[in-house]
Length: 147
Image 1 (cartoon, rainbow, N blue to C red):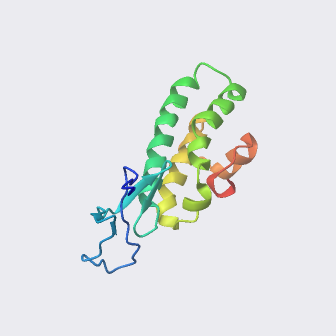
Image 2 (cartoon, rainbow, N blue to C red):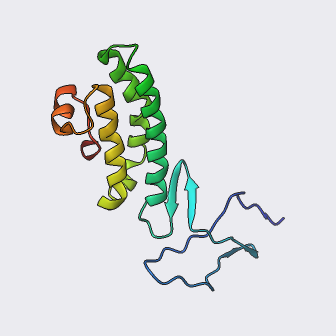
């Protein structure tokens, strides 16, 4: 009895820095696996250059959505109640698999840092040019570098 089982979403990623070999192909049980530039596996987007930009972009979108919710909610609840809401809406997205994507380049993480700083300013009703280092210290909220 021959087992022809192959898990459904199977893709081949050829990790490369610059040169992409277009003739690269992977076969399992005489089935050609499709080549993709990025794959979502267990909620983490892994790309062929391992620079994590697609995953960081996804996290940026999720944090931005939560920032909008917190911006509306901050007018109705106190800060001490808003802080746990922030930790439940934002930090799971930031902490999930951060050991992998957290070491990506400064340019990849810069926009995420900006969005997170904006969130802290929103929570504290601060102006857009307020120094966030003082806000992180006063509110005892962790920034991305300390996660």
